Amino acid sequence: MIDLWYLFLAFFIPGIVGYGGGPASIPLIEHEVVKNYDFITTTEFGEVLALGNALPGPIATKMAGYIGFNVAGVPGAIVALVATIVPSLIAMILLLGLIMKYKDSPRVKKMTALIRPTIAILLFVLSFQFFGTSYESAGIYQTIILVIASFLLLEKWKVHPAFVIMGALTYGAIFLS
Image 1 (cartoon, rainbow, N blue to C red):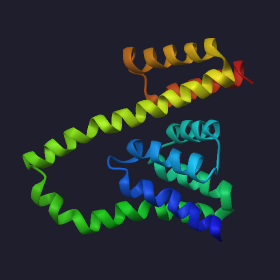
Image 2: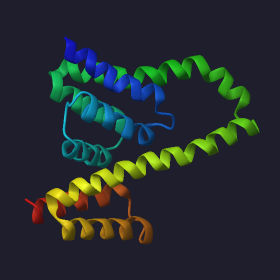
Image 3: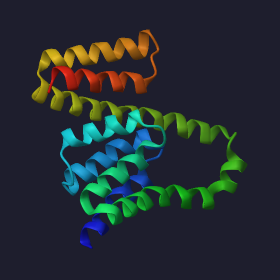
């Protein structure tokens, strides 16, 4: 029962403070499930994130369902999913009128523009942590190959991220297992 409460908190708090959706919430979820509650390791979190990115739909809910199930079975998955969805649902219901009224306001646009760098920094820190974990487990050469190949595929050749993730998973299965 206590695990269900901790699961709820681990996904509810990032849902409240994770302005910007799933990508902005990922570092917050990682902090809660890896550092605060020790549900999974950083490596496992990276694998869950990669798998979640390869599947269609919101990343936070896929991660919540998987981690919740690993911690407490079906009840854990349900609690983690509800905790992930409830903050957005409450905000949408309570703030829909204000959003529609002030959506073209210069102040709202400026606030949104000021928050974007914070989200970028959080994602950079998470990427840096994953790079360190990858370096420790796979080695520097394998990590560099994957980073360069992913960058080129995403930025130069505009390959869809799902295909890049599937390619990286395949590469890992063939060369790193």
